[in-house]
Length: 261
DNA sequence: ATGTCTCCTAAGAGGAGA
Image 1 (cartoon, chains in turn green, purple):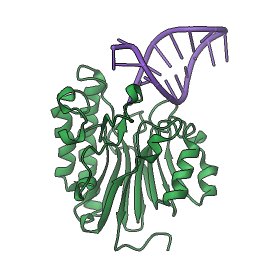
Image 2 (cartoon, chains in turn purple, orange):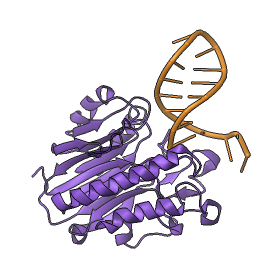
Image 3 (cartoon, helix red, strand yellow):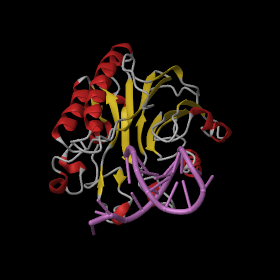
């Protein structure tokens, strides 16, 4: 089973790229973030034409998350239970014996911003949710744009970014608290090239100069860890015309019957 | 280095968010 995540920065602007990626990589589940469209405006027919189902939690202009899958997701649930939020940032579904949650964590803007305080509150709520989900679904994958670079090696210039939003200690602690509930950073289960990133700023030719951050992650529960056989970032779509600022990340899992078989 | 991209309102640029 292949599970992937991609912040597409508008699903309608990026539709052809998403469809091409589905054709080329045939993931069993693709978690999407930053749809930037209402649920009714999600390009459902186009993904259905490729044989995909979709669970969508859309929102006008901002945010919005989805799960595309070769077999329909079971037990769909949008949002974080008990955390009232008009921002559509979370959607979950079950695929075979794996529970998958697509997350678009708040950016935070800057340490002085109200959005930063919201980000930390949001992470605390997500931690509580994941703790309870892990009890109900020991085989859990949480994939998405976490807007946190967990370590200095995930940052092209850790000195310049020290203490800045996406890299600050409270954010890293909040990300670490998710892992402490029983999740692993899938990317770090494997040997990886140095200077591996998932997001590059649109400005300054950042992608060409590999001035990036690794902020998109696939978290794998401890029960599922032994079945994770690969995790990688696909930089190719970031080099396309009119790219998203994020690259897809994907992980492979063995030992489970594919839900479509 | 205020750089780049997307989407909104609202009718032409400008602001918000990332």
